[in-house]
Image 1 (cartoon, helix red, strand yellow):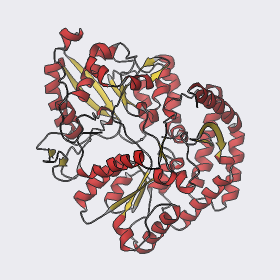
Image 2 (cartoon, helix red, strand yellow; image 1 turned 120 degrees about the vertical axis):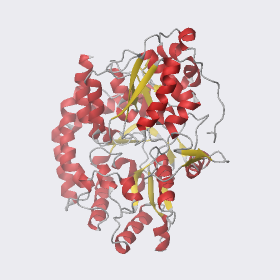
Image 3 (cartoon, one colour; image 1 turned 90 degrees about the horizontal axis):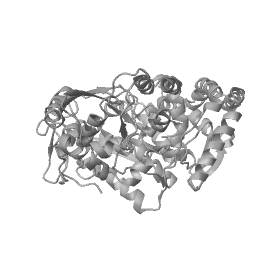
Image 4 (spheres, one colour; image 1 turned 60 degrees about the horizontal axis):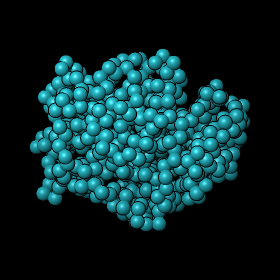
Length: 527
């Protein structure tokens, strides 16, 4: 699920398109009962559904194999309830941010579109990409309006208006290292709990398992378009616990949010780059890591890599479920970065949501349909878990159980990537998810500090340094990414060269202007 530098790197082209676009335009296992959603939408809410309509729905990622089957079942329901059908579309994971921006800039008819802070929801909303929902939701979906807490509606407002329907499931998405626990035990290695024990594990894999790469995703995702290196800084230095991430080389301390520290200009930065160089020299990842374009969870599940460093609790649970099905003899372990840093944040309400794009002409019908995805158990289970008896079953204890394995099952749990319409009152969990729920409980009942997610409400305005920002992007791509990958032999010279080029690109201006905005934002929210 979040740091600024990565969003900047992975979405620069999308942001450029954004400018053109705007100028033109306590979970309960099992099935707990909730109030039924009325099907008398026309008479009760005044929505005109006399003409049949097709809703166009866009999600991120790749479509599940049995999507057409699920879509057919959903449409049988929607025709009866709302006199409409729906077409579910996906962006695919390849170059997602650029495709996302093209969907909006093209002006094509889209009725519901996934939104998130990491997909620049606030920036798009501010520039007019989405329709305001302040009046639409209470009219078209009054049950949903009441179901979502007022504080969540307020949290997703941009300049006083609501442009997305936020998710209501409270979750945490700190970085999680997922690794082969059976291999750790096999070689009698110490428990992984810090950078020293982690490096020991990677060394043992490299030495003893010639057919398994210690890790590959590490560098691929630290480059252009992944969760980013800065999410893992607490592993390198426990004092680096920022709720800002690293923006243009600046980070903060959650204890003093408004104060910014220049990471790129620090000795810590040099030391971290030397660590990465050492790891690359030891062969922890291959020379092709920077251009890797393969799902690393698949690589892990296929036994080709021993560790994934860019996971999160929910991904960990998904991996665990698949591994237990395909490799019952394996053990999978994890290390949450929050356990290292002693700090964690719940996701902000803008982390998962759905908006009605400006181009839609069926906003009320789209919102009424979306309400059913959230509140109606039949719609919800069908789109989250598939067809009962075909794709899943519910155990006597109330757990979700996938039928068959991931190869045979055409619709595994949450295969539609419907994270935004998870309903905590009816949500199903597979037994492997108990480990995640325990992780969440640990966050809230131990010495780990549960802080505020400040970044979700921050809207950066880079208009004053847009040219410098673009130039800095090129510098990062050319000089910083190879440093992070450990591919620069003379690290100190490489750092000096990167700093010099970044300064020439206008880094000082960017940092100054960004710093003013961040500090003003923190002052405005009393931080």
